[in-house]
Length: 320
Length: 270
Image 1 (cartoon, rainbow over the protein chains, first blue to last red):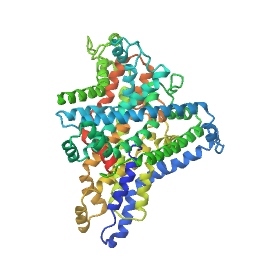
Image 2: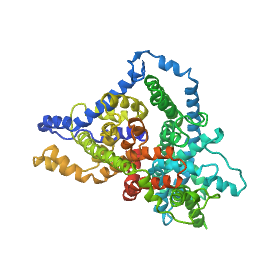
Image 3: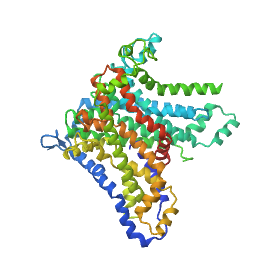
Image 4: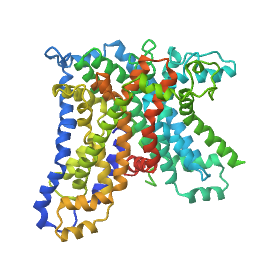
């Protein structure tokens, strides 16, 4: 689960320390050891195959030229070196970078705005929060079908609305200029409720007395946001920016369902995972697809590391 | 005045979140002629509830797809709750050599993106002859580091006294797990169940890769298939869409609190 990984690691360290061994229970030690291994045996067996073995299988396949049918041929690192000469791969990488750069700030800004609006004690707030979270629960297939219809050039609701202001119909998903932002908008919209929930939790952890003191000092709303909310919310913002980056980098469904598996029009919306799926399951270049997944993994590690280095300095952990 | 502005902003945001779904509902109740009326109409002139009936006869596999999805999701949830809670109990309460190392390996494994696993999972499923069977979707998802981690974090918050007392009375670890820990873990199990239900019900990439023949499809794959094959049949696409959303709506209505707690518990607080 990419959305929880980093925070989990941090909190696991804290809880492991809290769960340090207690009291002398030597008599039961051997029975306890045996019970421990028996209890974890099913999960361990499962993860030996689906966590450990798959990684080795994937690494091995990435050194093969293999179409699943003829016997694999060992090609060393050729799959990896070929990637960097593959214009379409570079195109997909570039599209993905644009997609992430469009989506991450938009998602953070909007979900923070929604969380701020939803963090007031007005009546009926439960309804509003339920509404904001619902798109996260819906499936991308359902969402994509309705957005394909909303984005429709001739009959879509969006062009119908813009038509009121005399704007000519736009071919949202059919033209290169608008297709990628249109897909990004759907992805951002769908994930908004999840990030909002995280921001809400962060906002509620800020002590109310800080705002009371600021009001006494005559600080306005904007000043309160700038000097209290924003700095004290920085751990949440940091976390959301990392998980969002990881999530948007691995977008597959929305493109496949909105503009097709080939990332149309003219590969303008072809994202990294879509190209990987195309290579693996349409052209059956298993080795090539496997090497693509490893390059993506390495890239994500590097970007996450850089984010940690650059952003962590500005994060205020005083409350955490 | 401030209150009016507040409600204005909240209402606008709610509209942005919900309008696509209301438009789905509106379109699903229209005749095909009215679907293509321009400018679009929100309330149909004539309500065509029969879209919800003809859908099942026109796409005879719709039923099968929904049943397939239920079957897959229920087996995955059952297996994960059982297998993950067993390990989580051991990681939270029992002491055995290598425990912490193993636990950290699990936590670390959550950092590996899914994309690395998809291809080898397919190759392994193929070697085992699982392609185009539901086994290919179920078995890889029968346990997860996320489930183990989430349940362990919860088990650590259960007071130890009850278990220690049971130990002194000579209860086995299995009985403590079954009669004390599990009954006290309702909220955590509910949270895990809700997340697993949503993720697996909505999963698209794995069924797309693993399944080939329409009778085996899950509801998501089936809908996408219909979306491709009958892309202008908007009214019935939307009614199928709404039917596929119903189980999610029910789960969401019943367990919204657990979802929010789950996100904040595993996402930030630990």
